[in-house]
Image (cartoon, rainbow, N blue to C red; front, side, top):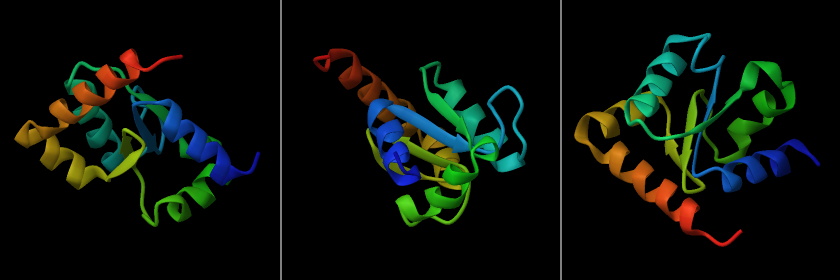
Length: 111
């Protein structure tokens, strides 16, 4: 499976996913730190992928949704954006709502 297919599978099989430098427990850049903290602050589950551990994902993710930087946050298979957008959504309360809806849909979807 090529990198773009793997990204598509990851995005579609997780209601909320962040592609970041490092992990939520050990972020490797400030933008990844702040974005993952905003996701974690909702108290809802999310998946993450460390782009530094997979050169194919690192090289191809910017092409997947035509977004050049990391982190990238996807909710309900749609690109939400990067750090700044995620923080704005968190501060407005919209991130909580989007994540709750995505997680609820995933929990009620047929297997």
